[in-house]
Length: 273
Image 1: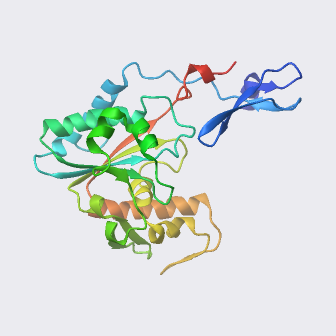
Image 2 (image 1 turned 60 degrees about the vertical axis):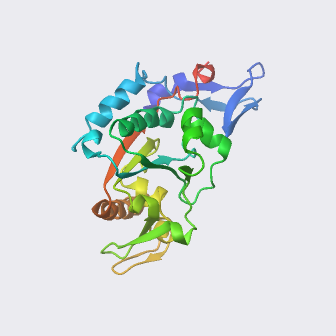
Image 3 (image 1 turned 45 degrees about the vertical axis):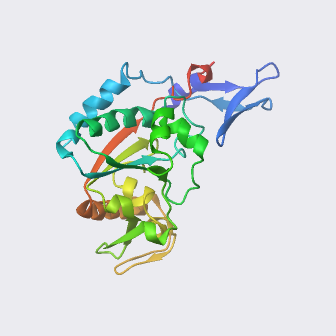
């Protein structure tokens, strides 16, 4: 944000200031801040979609640079839907969660094409597993009751039987991902974009992988066939994530559904005052 626009979003706390709401992990704190504290608020949210479900249906039937989702479907196929976990955003957004909205549209389309072999995997990578209550809140009661826990579950990066090795990139990056996803006829990845590293090639190659694959771009000193990185940096991470993602795309059929959130994701009660 340009400096000349910053002042209107800054509040300096004085002795009469009201307590401020502060994000704290999975929750919010209401906190009295010391006098002189500068609180920086985000800009006003962009206008949200008037009909998110209609926008989702349009997006999956008019994707960028590829055939629509329905053109990839046929009866009897094996489909895996992977979801970003609730590490984005934190605290959790107001309900209905955008992932629930997308699932409703996608699952209805799969039913129309008589696709029944469906698993929904929460792409936790090496994050902690989402709890039953968190999962139910994210996907909604209807989907939760139908799929949990046999066909809706957390990715397990430490299960040797649940991981399959796809191979190595030319640079020597080991690529190992979730077996169910790798053996599916189609993977549908539902992604939330909040930072530049989200989405695209990052999705399957990180969210559904294990330690051996993650260390290629998260380890500060990684030795491969053709190069050595001694310092971690964002450019290096982008390069490795992209080449792993491209390698995964050579072996799997993946349909990405990318989403972005405005600053209304927590509701109007937390808007700038």
